[in-house]
Image (cartoon, rainbow, N blue to C red; front, side):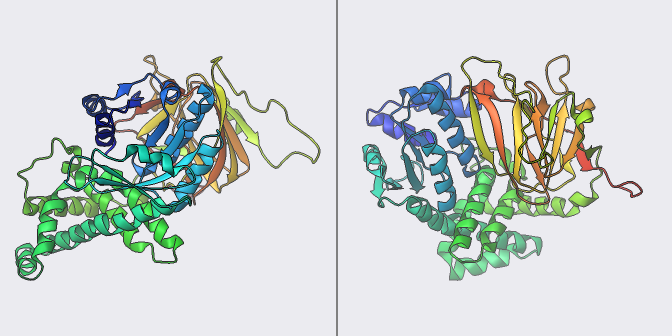
Length: 458
């Protein structure tokens, strides 16, 4: 969608700029083919832009907005920011708050329909907000901009209602067809539908074989739809189930393909066999509680954590006192600014398989709990190549009255909340470049569990 929108706007004579630092070769190829100017950093991008369009998987929407706001502060320029992602009205208003902190205007947008150029009908951009009129500059060349007034959330809401039916129906089709496949009823089921609901079968044959290539990106969209229905007082369960089905489809071999490389000869009957096999594997695999941990997390203590940073003892000081320099907040770049963000991680079940590690080579990072039960930290020193040495990985469980500070360059796992969803304030020095955070993808990483109390087996 992003590169197709950019290509359409470029055809209107608009200059399209982006920052592809850290993005895949596929993304770079699509952006290059669409005529994007690739700039070296988000700071450079916002400096050149009059309007920023965020078109991302919904799970990335808040983080992208936070990065854009940080870049605007560093650049000293605040172009209008339009969130065009498949998010709930609540998430849209949350992002509005992020963008307003840097003084930029926020526009709520919802994109309906296939990408520009993929259909005879124009792609619809529903937009709302006090500054939404400026989105009228996008109208034409395959895009139809539709104004919905000054209220933030209206544009996101219509996108949620639309996708609740389209993608929601596709998951229902897939669930029913796969059930028939598992029970040996596919031929009879399709024959009945062909005689009584031929238009449904046509839609099944068109969409069900293609879903895995987008499944990973659509999990978050189903969760946003569920939240939207819940906020309206309706049951959330149907679209939570749709998210679970996309998780299954994302584990099929087809998920490794892309929209450009998917096998066009693969039939509905072919994919149903693959989906049924995937369900069989998932059923046969041990539950998370049965997975043996290779590394056990210990209760967080200042001396054990000292090689990686400091532990902040909260709620223990006497009234009227202050502890200065409680953490070494490293800042190794003159052009970096303090980025204060609010993180709201979902609960993560354990044992946890390590798949990613991150570090901030030029800044410390401090986490101060606001609303939290416990959280899990995994840290590792660097090996000779500068990568995380996972053979020396250590894990700690922190309480709600313990904050932490990572020193600059420390490899650590993304923040992991235990027991329930959490909220914490995060401090880090950023300059908006791709070196604010280094990511390392772990292949066949260790599994981390929580050390049982003394006298109990794991």
